[in-house]
Image 1 (tube, rainbow, N blue to C red):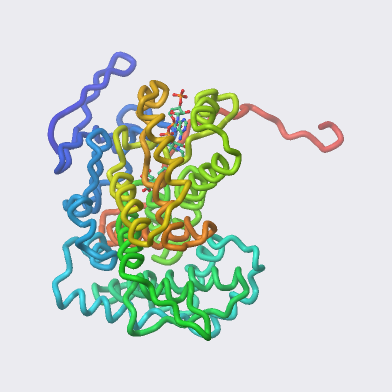
Image 2 (tube, rainbow, N blue to C red):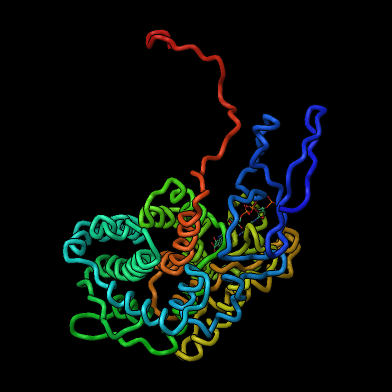
Length: 428
Ligand code: SDX
């Protein structure tokens, strides 16, 4: 707590306490506002509202800063694997050798889903959206292993975390296999997190898929960059659901649904579809930019803009560099990358985007990286969900560990009809 804010309402001056976080962010604590003034605040989209105090991730949107538990994303990129980063995000510090080994074993031991659960995949239509399957099957996990919803101590939390993180990978790969009519592939005990996922995605009974070190490193980087991002739409959803004391799996299944939207995690698919459309139509980039600026056409530059970043999204810079490296390592080219680079250059010089502080976000280059490592388009948002799982788990844990946490229950301002009388049906 620090200073005081003064608010004058209807001739009365009220004093509201202010709060400063460890990175200097300032807030007016309005937890007593309604009781003392009868007023509530109104903030469509919560652009100015802090829903919680959190120690997991810090973002400075103006400076383009992203830190997990105080460590800049640039320091983790290329040094910490996704699994190590997940431990940092969830449990607060980089894992010791013993913690890392214990967690790695838990992940390997938890990779398989039981045979009854595998049968669900025969019931989904082949056209079923993978995000629908992912959300449904994460919830179903707790039906097949009720123990993971009883989290009483750190050991329970580690096991539930490992079950969720490990099996979300198996479920995702199984949803892909089911969608292309191939047999589901069992995980291998000798493979680490990213390699095992790629094995389950691309191996077939008569040929094992062996991921190259470059592809494995690129997937680890992609997942690590998506691990958490403060109170974004899907993480706030997980906190909302978790605040009612719903279990970890139900809360993260809800997070998958929020992430699915094209304005959020679905943007990595929409960004590649946009680039593909420009490429296939042969439309000059300048013409597409004109369409975006001419709002009537409702065309957005997908992968651009952000509620918080009013500067470059640091993840986008790292992904852009990784795309270049991976394509070179794999001796591949991608015309969509050329279009993306041209679009970015055009937007960064155009007042329309500059005035609105629209820069590439995490989704602008991530889809091109996923294409380079062979992930099919319909799995892009699922990849985002696998990457974001540690952040969802960390935020659920933060609420669950806080004995003072309360159920999320925002207020509203009613603007509907008043004084309406009931009428018999023949008089309506
Ligand atoms: C993610 O919150 C997170 O942290 C999310 C995320 C995470 O890691 O969890 O970072 C992941 O979701 C990244 C964002 C992915 N979404 C997209 O790329 C979709 C395209 N972007 C936009 O829809 C938009 O930028 C949002 C949704 C990301 C942010 O929307 P805001 O903050 O509500 O901004 P806004 O819609 O009020 O836009 C402000 C202005 C408007 O113009 P004016 O009315 O002022 O004239 O900017 C314009 C908008 O029309 N604008 C865009 C644009 N984004 C905003 N114009 C063209 N193309 C865009 N992409």
